[in-house]
Image 1 (cartoon, rainbow, N blue to C red):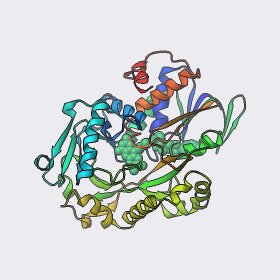
Image 2: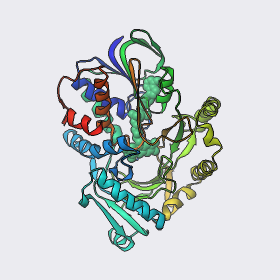
Image 3: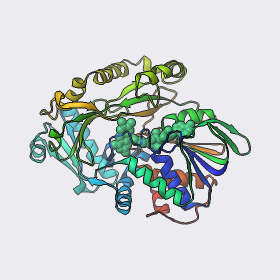
Image 4: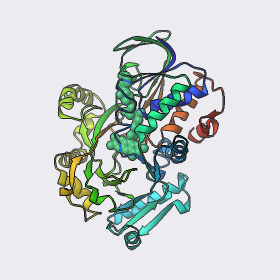
Length: 428
Ligand SMILES: Cc1cc2nc3c(=O)[nH]c(=O)nc-3n(C[C@H](O)[C@H](O)[C@H](O)COP(=O)(O)OP(=O)(O)OC[C@H]3O[C@@H](n4cnc5c(N)ncnc54)[C@H](O)[C@@H]3O)c2cc1C
């Protein structure tokens, strides 16, 4: 089988790339997805929030912040066009102490720097918060009205159908197993050999492994964290109007503390925590045990080795493990700001998802998404939250990087409902 461009990974990013490439270029686009459906892994296993960009440092997380700034309007427009659910419900970020309040002040500044209007983000004191959400207890809060709830799995399926109409091919149940670089690239899958002019690595939790197989980003490695959820009884469906997040205890780590989540259909959940696991698909004990030896060797021979001896990281990992083992420990983290919830009213686990956080050679977490060019290839690494929010504009950004490198020629400036040049200039 032959293609001009092969995208490895049919998550929300790979599918967004296929959606735009099939409309912007004449290239024959092929997507390889190992699972039976698109968005089978992280892209469906998340909180489903269209995040407002106030959480992201405009310098350290520039790409995530800019993509999120455009993502809200783009998903809103796409949802309208396709009659998919998009609930503009807003979010409350609460601080329980002085440190947290200082962080909220930073969020207001970042929100404005990242393009939120003054009437979209507000600082509230404890009593103003109580008027708005009587069940919430906090010292201060930030209310952002430009935040939404969606089903990213459905968005991804719809993008796939659009991409197929524009000529893209999706091979499901097809895993890229070996990649050989000749004049073209040869990808051996579980069922076929594909000859392609160019590879886009959008393989989510496997993207570092694929980059390494193509001799790219050898100085980087990753650690996987499973985010788990507990589903609340229906009696809590009207407990709050909006989702409630607390200021993270450890903002230097690439994940937040569990939140009170109101999903697009009104169901409520608590989560996610961040439990270290050994595989991007480490949803259960068997998969983790299977991958443990090779992941440990990989960690010990890379910058990640430092994490194993970092006392703050070990203590954080231990507390996340406890919240994995004990429902009460997990729910009590949210009970600190929503005292009425009772662990006995959470009867089943939600759908856990795994993130792959990239670590550099010094042992530090990389804050932003990474794009690396290789021979006949481009690799997207560290594509974590708010990756689903920013998937459409970020895909345009990757395409504009390919255009700069001379890999493709963009044939028209309109892509779907949007203007290619405006988006690519905003992110470059
Ligand atoms: C717990 C949690 C909560 C989150 N909440 C939010 C949120 O509320 N809002 C938000 O914006 N973001 C959120 N995120 C982040 C967001 O979900 C991700 O950034 C996004 O889904 C990443 O998309 P992706 O396409 O890069 O990766 P994925 O969805 O992981 O897709 C990659 C695909 O590549 C495939 N693949 C891998 N290797 C191969 C191979 N060799 N051959 C073929 N196929 C392969 C995989 O099967 C997979 O389907 C959350 C993440 C987590 C973990």
